[in-house]
Image 1 (tube, helix red, strand yellow):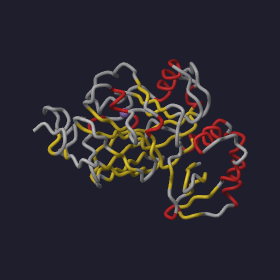
Image 2 (cartoon, protein in one colour):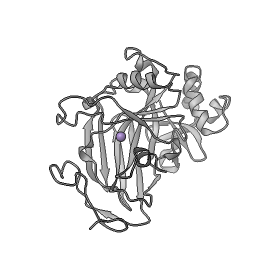
Image 3 (tube, rainbow, N blue to C red):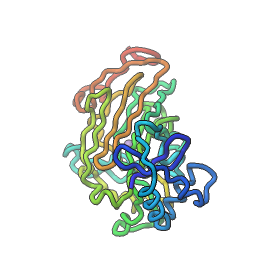
Image 4 (cartoon, rainbow, N blue to C red):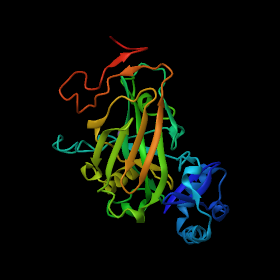
Length: 304
Ligand code: MN
């Protein structure tokens, strides 16, 4: 099942090119707004799945093209991002030590959202194509063997970065730097999440293209490890990392499309009121060159 928010945060189920409004079926889920309607529904999904499926069967199909999709998790309790979690096509000989970081939940934007580059002296702004897990049950000290039972579903995630600012916190938690969507696909639809192709295009040009089979610490281990650090709650996001080789500068006017196989396609645009420019080459294309990321060419903070 593909769960989405649309228009004025109506809850819908996506089926092909259409969506059915199921808001009435979930109105008795305790909530104060869309953010905890979805997380509380996820925590009770076994009770609601049958009711929602029946509502979809008798409901009116609305063309997806006629609605505005919203972030499926408008304000998750936690956004945890795995750091350096790919083998990078064999260029790493062994997995990096398992590591992650928090991203502010206020950074979330949804489908067709605008990622706004802030007026800070970053060396480059990048966005990392990632498969994100949506946690389904309260998870504390979960074993890897049990971990997949705690995964409610999956969504696309772009991990925005303002590289070269003084601290990691300032790099990753910028406003609008957590695009998610276009919906949540429940885990039953994705039997093997460790074999999904992930592609990211910038203005139609394929930049990132990798498979989740290259993940260094697999999904079950990530859930085990993160849940050993702190409790994860229903509706929390755990982003599983990226293959850095296709990273490149996001800049004003760019249209970014991220497709995760079997999950969906998330598109956003980039806005930079300073209209700074960088080269268009990827880290892979710059292999062996200095600096590792394409230098800023023009605009405020350019070094040249
Ligand atoms: Mn990342």
